[in-house]
Image 1 (tube, rainbow, N blue to C red):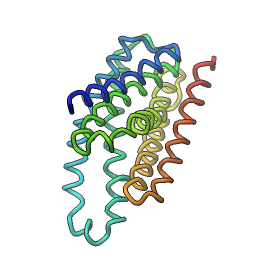
Image 2: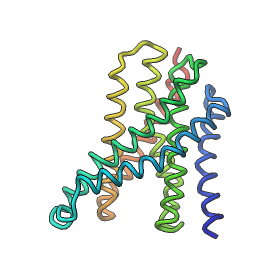
Image 3: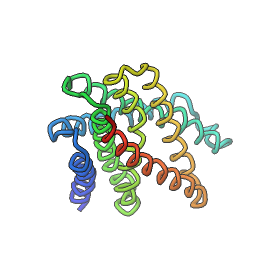
Length: 220
């Protein structure tokens, strides 16, 4: 049964890629497939990097004595930057081999497809670790959350490549995505009352993603 759930959860992430590619012109199926695959492959790399950074810089004593500080360092300085940075590297490799890109929103869509591939692989890992009941909300929260964070650094890359915007816009996007990712995970790691902050952040990022993408698609 777990293999069936794995297939369904993975297909859900692919369905989001199909949705965005159909709703917004500018991302062909081949390009979307390459970006999605790159995201899938980047997920275990991010997991390994996060694990070694966590074990190397955070000890059990800190976890026992200062749980909030431990979680803060973990999510803001390890998990958030590692996941967003490695997603970006996978996305960067996809973008630089695609010379047909002419508009910023095309780059944003590729970034979102990469992030959805990452989310799909991560959802499978969560499924095996925590079961389908706890992983089910990630079909919405995990997929759209990762896609929403990707908009920030993908826009920076797109504006740099197609509009000659300064390259530091990419670093600003990465920083924003890492911080937002860290905030979401940090508050989600505590009680249900704290989790409200995460859900409000998710709603805000998702609203921004759809609105910003619509604006970019119609911008000349």
